[in-house]
Length: 190
Length: 218
Image 1: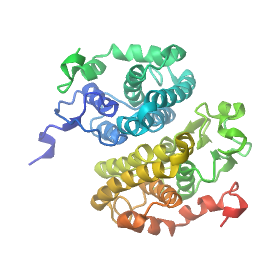
Image 2: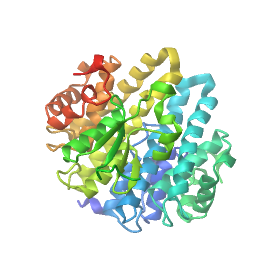
Image 3: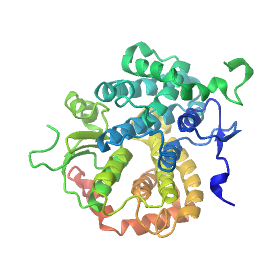
Image 4: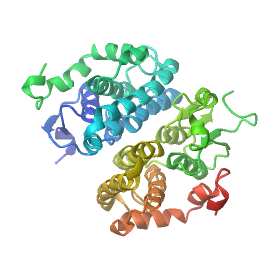
């Protein structure tokens, strides 16, 4: 049986920023897939490998620029979010932190966003790197969603805020949104 | 200026930073000569936070690499750039699925383990830092051991050294540092031992850097 004839299956949790990044990629590339909701958060951080594989095997539309230096900037921003911010505020860690979880989450998102705002001032055009949607943008939007969830004051990050707003106008970022998934609870559904 | 007067790349590094070590291995494997500027993460409240370093790297982290007129941070982004611009020897397999496996293992270590036991987090955790570090390394290594049973040959993925191996060795060093019992991870242990026989993993070792303190020097 040819593997190419079988639809991809995504194991996803509606609220997981890691799952959301991959859902955006699949939507942008027009890849239909089956979704299996999982209510258990596995460790995050392998989603960039998935996105890079999708990019290599289904290259259109691009999620990584052709220019090598811009491509490095996209990966740098993606890695910063995926390794430098998200793991420090994921569900499992916050459960371990216990009582002070809100303060902890805010600390790491704030630290990460301060650095990111500085980087984006150098790299951003309409989107994180220049004017084309890239893997960095797929990482940004779910992280901003988390920042809002943990009541981080986003007024301090005008570049992040502007780019996030622009991205949320795109269909791929809407259809993949946590409020519109098969496993979104009724009270959170859009 | 985007590179040193000699035109060589400049690596901002801390001897004990596993993220910096990954990049040092990559540079050594690819035979790229470079200048190293040590950034001490402990002294002066953390030299990476100093205003002068923020100009170099707005992300205030090591490693940072000045190369070809740009400054990059994030070890995997740096390694992927080196791979694309200096492709020999390869650090990513040609086969797309194997390449995905290399990235998956690298991501698992770089996003799933290391950030949870890095210096800044352990400083914040305070008293229970050893237990915390052991918890996250153990969790991460349990998963990694299972993955490697499927992917490993001589090295993490098949029989060629890859980016995944560059991530593995520094993480095992950290595991040893935090007294994690490695007997439970025979595949990880075997691959680590095999890799440490290679020159690139030795010259880049934390015990052999310009900023290695005398008492830790090999």
